Image (cartoon, rainbow, N blue to C red; front, side, top):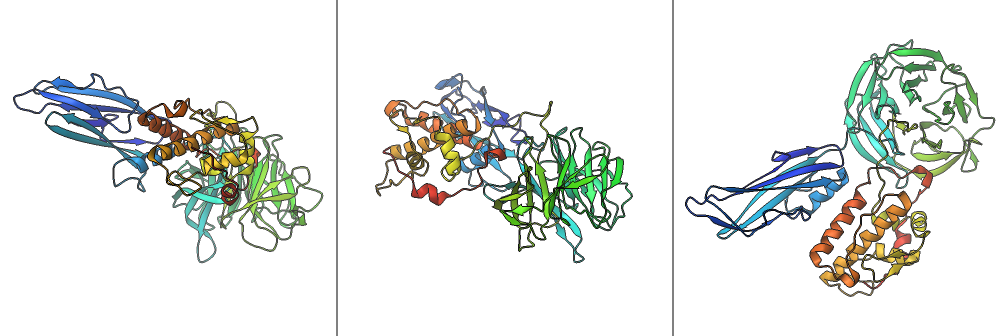
Length: 522
């Protein structure tokens, strides 16, 4: 017996959704007699119709071939499959899953397996994902490799590593034209290079950077203008350059102010007016720079941070969303650690703390500021049940349109307490301490994922799969387990896509969720 996926024993997936073509060939190897094929089974391909269906007779030396397709919706779905397969070697650090096909004969059974390896997509999508890069530091305090690329989650205050490169880089910027990140690799010793980065943090050198700045200059600020050209800045001589992002050629070069009046660590373009915004370290004010002339203008008053005047602060990351929201990542009053994420009021120039994250060095950030055709449409956003069970704002938005009917059809969720009771329900032990039966445990897991799918639809607009399990559980266990698999996969399919920053779902509090949960009867 032989099984293949996309014509091979192992398939590599790095774009999503990905359709996998499975083929299974079962052969009668008996030297003289026909064999009876009694059954075929594949735990992954439960939706597949095996035709011709067993039982059937396979003549001597003949084979029966089955074909079936399966869609891996996302990288996260692949990770989940590795946790549910029968292989003791998965899940593993390579992110793979193993799929086994079993054929039952009149004289025994046989198995064949294939492996699917998944990688993160190389292309980036224009959403509110906050990318943060950091570099190592030499004994002399200069940037060195490796440089690491992260995704910052403002809600959880965490950094998720995407990949690394040996080149130290800074001045990170998202290019909406080709959906890659761009940056400048500078180590303060050798000639800088203009580079491109993919979603896995792998770097490609576009060209050496030829400017009037010395090789000792550390380029720290970068942004992409609406036409796709790159704007970079280094604070040793306040040079600002405009670069052709395709060739790396420097198109223009100006000096912004002078070293006694102007200094910043990062800037970003406002998609609504095309001007460049940053935080002037010398004046502790929000500042605006003309991208063509380099003329800058500080806000009239020093910035307030959570209502208190800013003192000796530095904002190492400046990002705009496509809707014109401005965010900083930097230090806070009384601390030199760059570990705080702020929202910025463009009317006043004041900062409000959103969350606290890890401390970074030689760091910069980037978000897609322009979502213009023919950019890929943003991928659907989903979050798992723990998100809705920990965010009072998100759960309130989910329940605002009205009650949610449970998947069983035997009840509905009307209040936050009832919703939390479903989301935090334990599959094996009820709130009053009783052990659940296998059927009840399945019901709990199914209702948790169903409620999560409905919340994903109501809050993020990601349509829930059409799932009906029958009133009172009239569907059999196999169909209910398949519904659970579909819902779980759906709720994991959009985890890579950022929650829109405009939602302002800043804080997760699972203790709030668990302490307010009112468990229903399953």
